[in-house]
Amino acid sequence: MTMDTTPIPGIEAQHDLIRHLEGSQFGWDIVVGDAFVRGMRDIGYKSTAFALSELFDNSVQAGAGHIDLLFGFDQGHKPTKIAIVDDGHGMVPAMVRASLVWGAGTRHNNRVGFGKYGYGLPSASVSQARRVTVYSKTESTDWTSAYLDVDEIGDGKWTSGNRIEMPKETQERPPRFVFDELKRLGRADLDHGTVIIWENLDRVDLRQRDALRGKLVTEIGIIYRNYLLDTPISVDGQVVEPCDPLFLTEGFRYYDLDEDRAVAYTPATLEVADKQTGEVIGRMRVRFSRFPASFFRKPEAKAKPRPNPRRDMNERLGIADSNNGIIFLRNGRQIDVVRPPRQHLGVLNATTDRFWAVEVDFEATLDDYFSITTSKQQVTPSDAIWDMLKDKAGIFAAINQMKSDYEKNAKVIREAAEGEDKKPSIAALEEAKKFQTQKAPVETPVRKKEADENFKREVDKKAKETGIDRSLIEQELTAQQAENHYAIEFEDLPGAPFYRCIQRGAQRVLFVNQAHRFYSDLYMGHGTNPRLRAALEVLLLTLGDAEVNADPDSERRTFYERERASVWSPNLDDTLKSLGHIDLVTSPDSAEAAEAA
Image 1 (cartoon, helix red, strand yellow):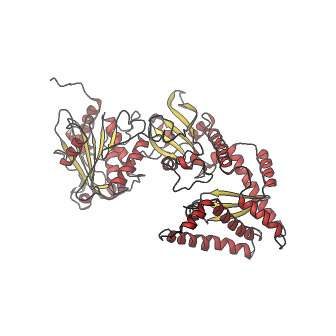
Image 2 (cartoon, rainbow, N blue to C red):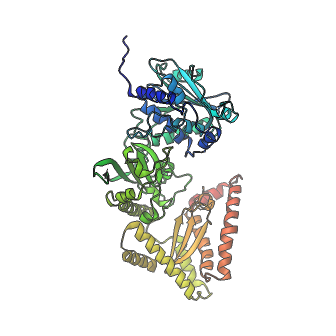
Image 3 (cartoon, rainbow, N blue to C red):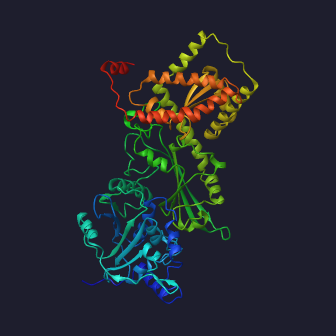
């Protein structure tokens, strides 16, 4: 068998770097030693998956056909080692040592693949573990290893004179568990490739095997969705499925979870030209996706007017929430999710803004416009980029259109579920007022001013969200309030009181906080029914009436605001939490009565 002697560009680049290191003043120093390494440990990777991505980037650029992430165990079921194995072209012996030196990468300022600074492997590794060992071989070399140990550096074991020097590489095969795991996966013995092992894991996200595997499979599937078909990745034996957070790619994870499908809006491709020469230096590709109002619900909850946020939601929701904003990719690899500037879109609402998604995939030649960080996990688009996305891709107009379309879709579901009749709680309140003997509170200037300001804020909010003319919004809301003097709405505000009530123009509005345990455990809890929910609404509206009927600066208003926020809400949360641990005995008669209601 004749060996192919055609030079491999990646291997040639390694030899060039090694000649540079051995012939320069820099040599094999780790630059600043202990303090530098401790600083690199705190570089701030978003998660273990993003740290691993630095290593996967190298594997993809090394031409790997497969990448396997393996767990090693000293005892029990908690991984004590993580091995990243690829079958790429590998590294020549001295390059194994060089791969652990900060800034000694072969792809400095690379604008074709992923590499940029040569910091990835050592920075990512020490951010998660106190020791990393690299093993690699090419088709023409034996296995070679080198390691980096945070504790040994701190103890001065690597100090020589006034320098801290990387130990020389040695000939050594990867540990046995790596080959045992590869054999279990049906992989042939590695003829060439790289194995990186993290030990003394002290900063990995999760330590339980199943939980860690599940988290990594999900996050890696999103980050590398555009590469997994060409370069499959497995985690602890589970194949990573590509997952498109826009849910537009047929065959990807959760695309066909149920009958609901994401709706694609017209994509855009933008060319970015050099200001001096006018030549195109890179492109941005933009995709848009809107999700139906029932998209994140399990099948049995599709038609519910108010689904339970803990029990009724499907797996898509977590992915949408972790990608809530403008998703940025570099050369097809996800880097960051950025909240758009407030002047363009206002403040994002965690509940309603999860129903649209925008992806911007930019070429690496545009790095300077995005201020991409050393760890390749954060971008800061320049003002020029935001202007291009606004004016040429129309992303903010598209988002407002998607939000408007979502509102229409959600309204259809609400009306279908509840019918057009007035809510029972509101009908009961209005009927009861006919028999009340106390006089209606006198309208005061301060209360009227408060109501008018609340109405104006609602008009401004809806006009910004929908893009509809403000005067038309005002007319529509005024007409609605003439027919309905009460309204019940829902909001998602972690840490806020379980309810609040305001006067908004001619309408009194009760807000129920979906983030409070009152909503999940009581209002929409197991065994609740429409009659119980209506009774709870009546109770809160009655309390709300007493509060809103008082002037804003009065002692009565202050009492309600203070008690609601600092006493009732936290006490109710604690009590409901305790109640959840108590077994309640329900008689057959009472259970049947509840079902009948």
